[in-house]
Length: 261
Image 1 (cartoon, helix red, strand yellow):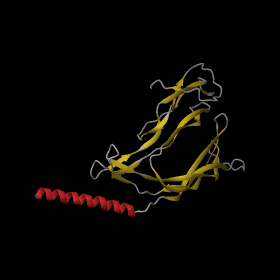
Image 2: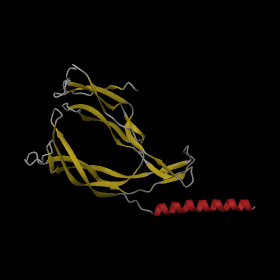
Image 3: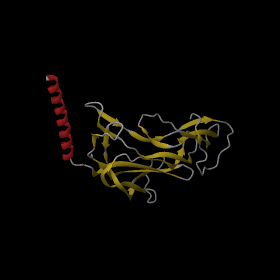
Image 4: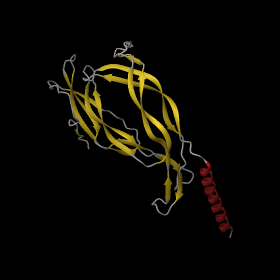
């Protein structure tokens, strides 16, 4: 009888704690806000040959989403884990675009530019216009085209079409449903799934060997994967003699699947 009463008492405490936690979570309001933050922006400008023309920077005020949203985990017989996750995240409802002026511009030699045509730089900036609580779980990870500038000591920079992984993935932290008084974390990042390689030659006018072969890498596909600390390297220079200079690359056809896959 004593053991039975003790079990009933323990279950009553756990049930009371669960109900109290539910009531408390319902009373807490969402605090997802659109706030102002100060950042430092640096932008480089290159010519068609990939040579640096100037570097401009400035301190700007931008908006950001910050706060938390009410989420909960409750028992469910409809899921394999036995728990139903109802997760909400604080993020932008849409982005707005505006033009901003960078006022501190310098030449590649570090000389401040004062001519009206080069002393400032106008760029476009995208920032959150409004922030709200949205249901988590919407992954937006995709491969995006970009122009990448290959550089090597003593060689002229060269711009080639390349790819990057861009987007966002679902991440959360919550009270564990299987381990008492512990937290579960899930961090997903938009990363590459496989690599492709390209070999490009750079012209090095002041070097003994006038051409260098550069091997660069780009994503083959992009997907949401667990966040990890990955040591990234993109350019591996290899000396070769008598390598013919290539013309400007106009497509991404120079990439091939990596042999390590």
